Image (cartoon, rainbow, N blue to C red; front, side, top):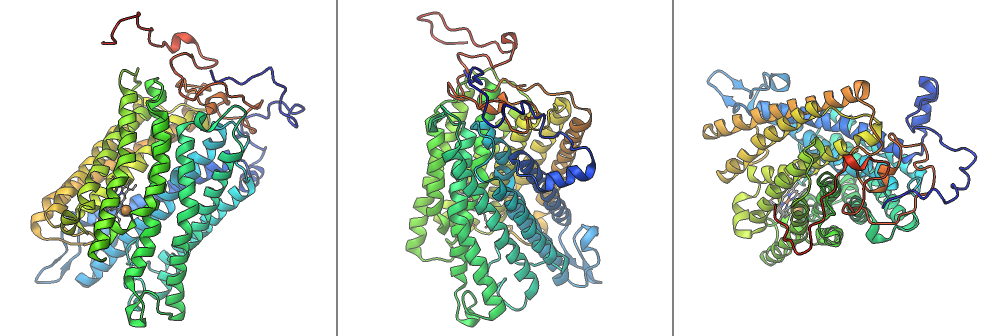
Length: 593
Ligand code: HEM
Ligand SMILES: [Cu+2]
C-alpha cells in the first residue's frame, strides 16, 4: 500500500525544521504575501497562479462566445430602410453597413478562438493541475527547474499582454488560425496582426519551458521505488503532452516569426503578391496545431483515468495500454496535420493523410474501452468529479467519432468549413478538455485548498453545463450537414430555428459555469475543511496534507505498490469502514450481481 515510510530518517536539510505548515499560510501582511507569491518558486503556488490566469481567460473567451451566439439569434438583414445588425446590442448595435456588422463579428470570433486556444486550453491543465500535482504524484519536492517554472508564468502573461494590446487597438479578423492571405494582406490592420502573432510567439516559449521542466522532472525526480510503470496515469499523460510541447511548439514559433517578417519587411514567404505561398502557411500552422489538439486533450485524458479509478474504486483496467496509448497519440499526432488541408493539397497527399488520420482513432478508442471496463462492476460514487468524468466519456466519444467523417475525403469535401467542423472541435475541445478540467478541479480541489466543495451546488452546475453544452453543439452537426458555413455573422432564414436552439443552449451553459464559480467561492469562504484523502485515492498526492505542506511531504515517500491497487488496501489514515472493498468471491463462483 502507498505508505510514507516513517522508519526512514527524515529528509536531510529538513529535520531541523519539521513541519512548515500549509503552502497557503500567510506571511503576515498582504504586501508580504503578494511579494511572496510573485517571487515564489513553489510549484503549488505557480500552479494556483496559472489556474487563476487560465480561468480568467476562460471567462473572457466565454464572454465573447456568448456575444457571438447572441448575435446569431437573428440573421443580419439589409431591410429597405437600413441594416439590422444581429441581436447582440452590446457590441453590434447600429452598424453602418452589413460589412461593418460582419467585421465586428469576425473580430469577436477571432478573439474568442485565439483566447480560448492560446491562453486557456493549451496551458489549461498542464500548467495549473499539472504543475500542482505532477511533483506531488511522483513524490518530489518540486519540479526540476523551479525558477524556470516561475519564469514561464511571467512569459505567458507577457505574451498575453501583446494579444490584449492588439485587442485594444481594434483586434484582428483573421480567425484564430491567422491564415494567409487574410493575415498577410495589407487590407487588414497591419500592427494588430503583428502584435497578436507576436503574443502567440512569446506564449509559445512559456509552453516549451513548461514541457521541458516536466520531462526532466519525470525522468529525474521520481520517489525511490517509483518505476515508470508505477507512475499515476495523469503523470504519463502530462509526460506525453510535455514531449509534444517541446517538439511541436518551436514550429509555430518559427511560423509566426516568418509571418511577422513578411509583414514588417515585405519578404515574400506566404503572400502570393510577394511571390510567397499561402498553402505553405497552412502546412506550417497545422504541423503545430494538430499536435496541439493533443496537448489539449492528453492531460484531460490523464485526469479522467485518475477520476474513474478512484471514484469507481477499481484497479484501472489496462494500465499499460492507457500509458502506451498516450505515447502513441503523441507520436501519431505529428503525422496527420494534412487532414486540415484536404481541400488545398494534392490528391495523393490527401489520400495518405486520410489514411494516417484514421490511425489516431485507435489509441483513443483503447482509452475509452479501458475506462468503460474499469467502471464495470466498480463501486461508483456519483460525485461531481465522477459525473464530469462520465460526461467526458460521452462528449469526447461524440467528438472523436464525428472526426471520422471529416477524415474521410469524400465526406470532408462537403463538411469542410461548415458548422459540422465547429461542432466536432467543440465536442473534443470543450467536451474533452473543459469537461476533463472540471472533473480534475472537483477531484483535486479539496487537496489544493483544504476545503470541500458543496456537492448539491456543484452538481446543479454540472447538470446545467452538460445540458447546455449538448444543446448548443449537437444541433450544429445538423446545421453543418445542411450547409451552414462557419465564420459567418448571418445566414439564410431556414437556419434560424436551429441557431436559436443553439444560442439558448449557450445561455444555459454560461449559467452552469456561474454556478460553479459560486460553488468555488462558497468553498473558499464557507466550505467544510477537507480531510487529506476524501475519496480514498492511493496515489501519492493524497498522502500530503490538505492543503499540502510547503515542502510537500514531511519525509521522502517510499513507494511500495502501484497507484491503483484498490483490491487489497484501505487508503492510509482512513477508516476501513468508510471504504468497504468488495468481498472476495467464494472459490468457483462466477461473478454475477
Ligand atoms: C478520432 C480523433 C479525431 C479525428 C479523426 C479528427 C479529425 C479531424 C479532421 C479531419 C478535421 C478537419 C476538418 C475540416 O476542416 O474539414 C478536424 C478538425 C478539427 N479537429 Fe479533429 N479529429 C479528432 C480528434 C480531435 C481532438 C481530440 C481535438 C482537440 C482536442 C480536435 C480538434 C479539432 C479542431 C480544433 C479542428 C478544426 C480546426 C479549425 O479548422 O479551426 N480533433 N478533425
Ligand atoms: Cu487535426
